[in-house]
Length: 351
Image 1 (cartoon, rainbow, N blue to C red):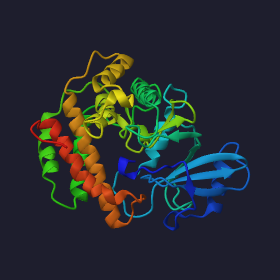
Image 2: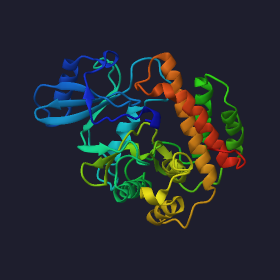
Image 3: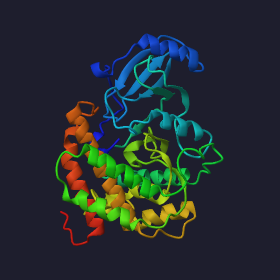
């Protein structure tokens, strides 16, 4: 889920016509596969613009969440709800804040696409952690809790939780570049010289790897569920891009606002830690002495976001995007790619 897709998903709406399915078939599935399930199922759709349609389920006084692959023609490796389910299930019992999983279904005859059912987390999503109507102390705590949650994820022994086959153990950035360069070219709708320069530069300057951990792939505070009343992460959300890889690259995606929306901000007034202090906190939590090639990792991750935004723009044209805000994505891709290139070419002037 990208920034341009984010709406407040705490509210629900009637299921959109294009996302409707046989509720009776889902109820039958849950009766057979969800422990403790009872009652008559009611279904609503979360109002937010998730890349995978997400539903609020209620039955027998309990609430659940269903995530499904969207209908329609999709990119080959996108919307991998099966991978979301696998990693969430593996992380049960670790220090990583996650929702409990209940059941997975790859039988498309049930609701039309693969899906899984998980715990409903009664919290709040902080869509704009860079501003918004928050006290500076609380906003700073959002950022610190996010840092701690990510450090916990990157500290998990992926082999001990059964995820040794969740991805290759090396060449993460190279593999990611191959993927996102290819997906960008597939979804390209206009000429973008910044993306062209990044696609030429980034593969030729990949830093030495810093290790291999579980990586989320889309780390941002908007992809975390906060406690209802405390500035504390209770769940990392939207795991469809998760795999094994370089944790520094993953962490850098969380930090990209420092070079974008926070570039000219008064961080002290906002209560947000300075970039170096934030990096230092992560290093202390993960036992690192520091991070080299930081500008490269930021450039790569901002490039990745630009490619994601371009993909959303293409989905708008194809009619498969789930967000009302997705039409802004095309312009966002151009602006974001300029920011990415500015991390490499310091002569680029940003507003």
